Length: 177
Image (spheres, rainbow, N blue to C red):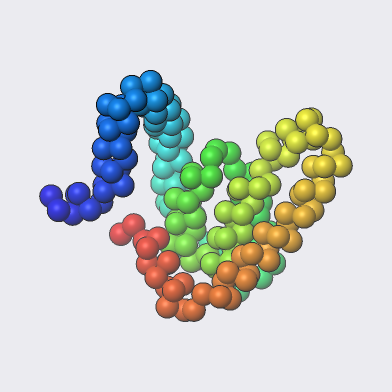
């Protein structure tokens, strides 16, 4: 029971806050409940397909293949594969983190996983198409060309700033087993 409370402490705190707000300010509380419900429905529509894809990735892609493509000795190929996977992805950013966990489990280099997350968050193809249609191709290309070195720089600086113990802790946390 104690472990269950510890695991869901943030959820329980927010639930109590929502109840208190609803009691004190019913219209604000109702608005908060409506937003929470909408977000929950959105997450439940995104997360099951992501976990199906994770299961397929886990079964279909061998660890050796992932190490070859995105591992420590993958070089520029690993960064390009990570960037392509992130840019071609669909869905909100919170869907990227379980996939990043599987990439870590499969032996991907830490900086390549960070590139994947950075590409997912800033260079998704549908977002680029939207920017092109609403702000023009010059803006889209300019932002894209600024994002690429920014993502790579952040990934490599972050990897260099972490010591081996911290990186190992992250790899351990990514393990589902």
